[in-house]
Amino acid sequence: MTTKSFYYSQIADLRIEGVGPHASFSINLNVTDDNRPNRKWVYVSATGKTAAAKAAGSGSVLFWCNVRDRLNNKIYKLDRHRGEYFAIGINDSLIGSVKFKISKKGLLLPVIEIEDGYIYDGGYVGSAVPFPSSMKRKIVLTQFDRHYYDS
Image (cartoon, rainbow, N blue to C red; front, side, top):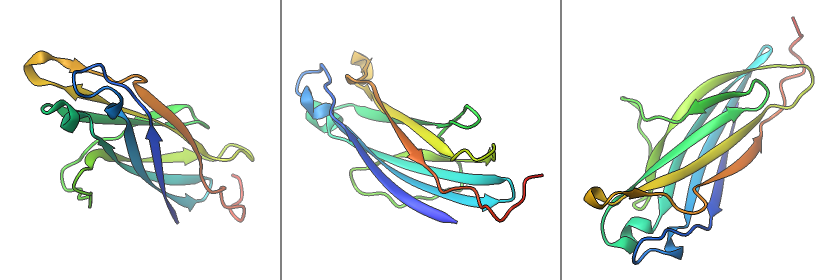
């Protein structure tokens, strides 16, 4: 079982008075993969951070994150579930977590693609997304164990 942490940032602009270039955001990911015969279980959890709501003086932000298994081309959405607990910083926003299985396909490396972003909710004045509205990053996971035989 391997656990890795990743921290990605995206420079962004939000056309709301007082925000502008302060709409940049960052994502902190924890990725755990556990090898099993001919497959691997992957667990991803994430938090997000931005100064957009503070710069605007009001409103809130709602982060979102999707994980795509590039071997099987399946997309998983990070959610918050009852009974799950996370330790986060004072300025962090919890995005959620997801657990899924990647099946082995020949000698290909398991790769996941993360796409994330946020929506600024200004309440009665409406919602807005920054520009660019999301960021994508690829993460190469550890190889499938070679001592397991293909069936």
